[in-house]
Length: 103
Image (cartoon, rainbow, N blue to C red; front, side, top):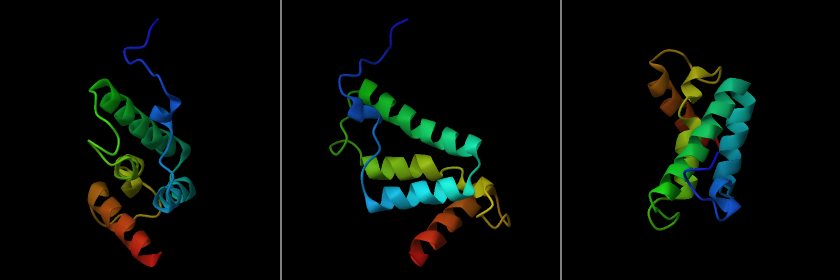
């Protein structure tokens, strides 16, 4: 079996290195179960591979840090850190904002 995307460098699947990314990983791993955590990280890896397949370059065509944060936190509203008072996607956005403001 061959890959549809040729990976010349392993940095395609590496996480961006920043304080924000560390905070997002901490929030995700402290509050999401293994299934949601793994799904969220796979979403980021899939997005990076899809971008690579389309010839998009990190830093030129998209911001890798923002892509990581969006993918990693897209289901945070399903976790115990969210209030549960609204739809999960709205709860997730509020949760991320309040956690970031508290930092």
